[in-house]
Image (cartoon, rainbow, N blue to C red):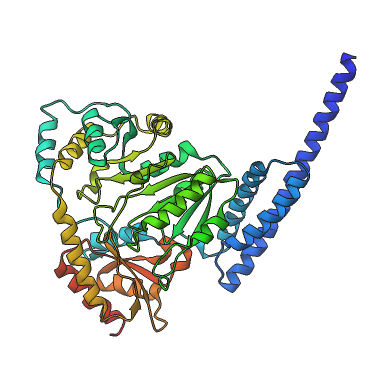
Length: 459
């Protein structure tokens, strides 16, 4: 009897081997089809990702899969892996194989020109030109004498966590200090998402959301917003995007690059959708101090699967200090802490004490200064043929040129004339006609930059 079972086991293993080989052959066939599609899209100058096509295919496959008894979430995870591979193959067939020209790529190009002796006006990066509070300098000078130069708790030194907790009206156990907001976003995704899961983002969007998700094999579904609709969110589209594999919705308010602030009723609706589908909500609030209309943090909604991200980079002009933080439930933060422990041990101790000192300083003038610069940009834009919406917050204008003026040409012409701005397609492939202008320079430099902008647009 035992021999008969062993023979049956060997037969099943052989069947499994053959079926798996058939699957691999079919995957190869699918990849060849994806390559052909990529060639056609390249010739037609079409965007690579088409969510409507993906959704139609997903509905078809889900219906077929559930009819034969497969788990819906497993189907979605497998399908998302195939989608990601198709996108990768198609990008290799288009110009996207080249390095995408985003704000950081433009910054590096500008820095290279500076190293060659060319003077550049930097309107491409969101890095305040003003210094951190003086208290930060004082604290840094003390750290050596105080021997604050060691490893710390992975979650951050208690005094900083307590200060952040008081600032945000939460418990200390709900705070973790991270090396900048970017790592907070990355570790939040790594600790809550799995390969083949989906996240929903709203574009235009900071590129790091998509980059972090794709790095860990998570499918990004982007909902496009438009300047014509004043960057308002389409809540019906959010509901249409949700599948059993949707595990996170990413919010950014004020938005980078548009400055749009999500209104309370819209957050209410998004949280209702999230709650109904057991979805995490990651809220990037790095620009929250630069809010010029009423603003409400995700923390005020008390959603138990929310993860609020912020940092000291923009509010306290501490980009190089690399101190950010996340606020969430203890269960979620325990997972994030494990990722951080493996990756970095802890944020540098001197930087944490510097951030603690920064929190005791009044930086409201930073927001007033930025608003003054944005108002200046607004007045200068009257002389430029473009469409835009005045930002609710943040430190940028996101504009689209009129009269068939090529944004790509403007980018290059500006750089040749000594002005660097951020390409719109870095914030989503639908925004190739846009540029982002940063208000992080003194008004004199902004004035000089716009003089050159009017020159290259022939105004």
